[in-house]
Length: 294
Image 1 (spheres, rainbow, N blue to C red):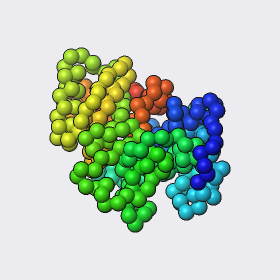
Image 2 (image 1 turned 135 degrees about the vertical axis):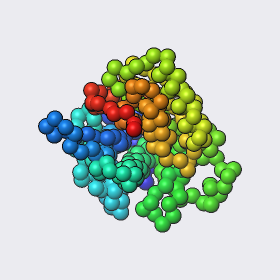
Image 3 (image 1 turned 45 degrees about the vertical axis):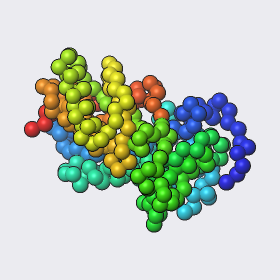
């Protein structure tokens, strides 16, 4: 790596999307395909939006990633879409059973790890990290899948066995507490949601029930006109999707009319900015019908 002598101008930060570092996002959503006057098929779709600065800088230094097939494939297949940056499809599967969901989640997890490696390269090149906290990153491309995120060096590094002791303290981009990673979840309301007292109580009770069952810590839960924003501390052994999808399914089952769409946005980088949340919400089919669970 080069020494941290490179400088960023305001335009670079703007194209990086983050206030003081790179920001990208991975979306796992349900896509309903309608043929004539009926539903044809339902797919789970994984898609990534990469900030222009990171994508173009990594592409410029493509040789550095000669042995990283995932990044090379992303560079070859992503398309530039203006305000959405560089967009790439990370896979889709017809929704049939739990196997379909597992496949989609694996694709999303792999894409997240790929973007983290791209971000790490930019962070290291420009010296954007100055603390010494660590966070877990698992990389299935390595024989030893246990890696830690070194924020001081801005890259993933193999971890010694000591990091997996019960007393080890780990950290992440958005921080940790009690050895749990902080995540932010954006849940989109359905069109014309029933936000009366009964629905609010059902949401609060469901959030408490699911978080208690999964040992998730709830730091904050806010509701807005079109969405709810949850800040949660997720145990490292728990997939974030298990928590948020549990909240969605159980909350919708607890009320007469569903509150939330099945699509959601999740990040553990930093609290999403309003414009990022609106970008997510604008892509959702708010008028689609949502059936009650049987």
